[in-house]
Amino acid sequence: MGRIWQSTLTRGAALPRLLPGLLLGLWLSGCTSQTAPPQSTADSSSTASLEQPQQKVVLTTFTVLADMAQNVAGDKAVVVSITKPGAEIHGYEPTPSDLERGQDADLILDNGLNLERWATRLYNSLPEVTHVTLSEGIQPVNIAEDAYQGKPNPHAWMSPRNALIYVENIRQALGNLDPANAATYDANAKAYSEQIRAIDRQLKQAIAAVPPENRYMVSCEGAFSYLARDYGLQEVYIWPVNAEQQATPKQVEKVINTVKANQIPAVFCESTVNDAAQLQVVKETGAKYGGLLYVDSLSPADGPTPTYLKLLEYNINTLTTGLQGN
Image 1 (cartoon, rainbow, N blue to C red):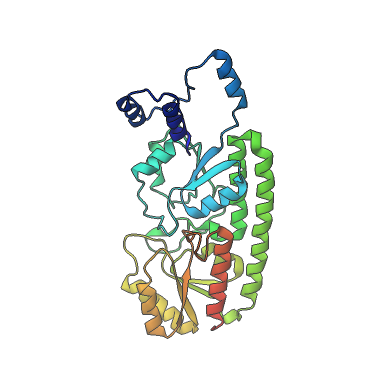
Image 2: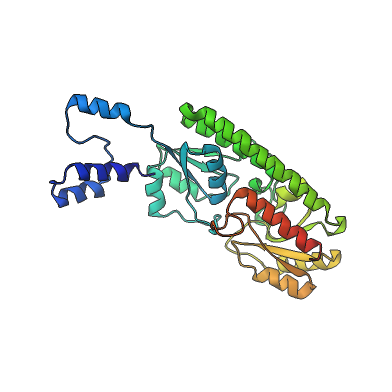
């Protein structure tokens, strides 16, 4: 990430007599030359032979993918999320700083499945940067209603089974980008995949402890279709995908009727959206408000879900606690 800054600072340190105005002009013009300070040819060759390979810079569209990619990359690449912890990613608008970071990136990883429609504008401005879609190879769950009918639900990473496909796609992308470290990426991906399989087994055991008649996932957004499919949950939500207009009276009424009819003990909402509509469901049905679930974003490092594995564990613990009436 720091190649442009490093080369600029190095020139400044080596040429202290340059006029300040000239140095500032070079920085503002975005000069990225890696040319070393003037020296003999022999000195230049010696310096080059001692240089360590520079880490690759990988951008991801949101924090969950960044955590996955960093687990595979280890210390061989720098991974940075474009969006910050807690950000709502569906309607994100790229900033000038995102474009600057993209210009210095070697690879951009996205989710696809119509999640980051804003990324197209970013890629159009960065034609030289390779980007890879990590949901490639996943069988999507299609949305059944509203304006999104027939379109894929984009939240495929919420399934640990799908996460194994994400990890494999990350491994291949990093290996293609940086063949010299492919063996490290292979080993890291294998170890991380074993952790994902272990959390999958843990989630199955937790859901098995919930009475079958209570196995409902009631959320604000329909972000848990893949999770519900994997663990035998009935999914209920107010709106299918985050959009500008959410929580219509008809949508809220449908959830209220479903919760009442099935005596669902608890309902939940995602951390990146307004929970006012779900609180209305609580008021009308007498169900408990089970708390926040994390989907589109990790929490900050000192929060409850600083990693993808912690996100899965926290969500299932929150869900099962609510559904068991605790």
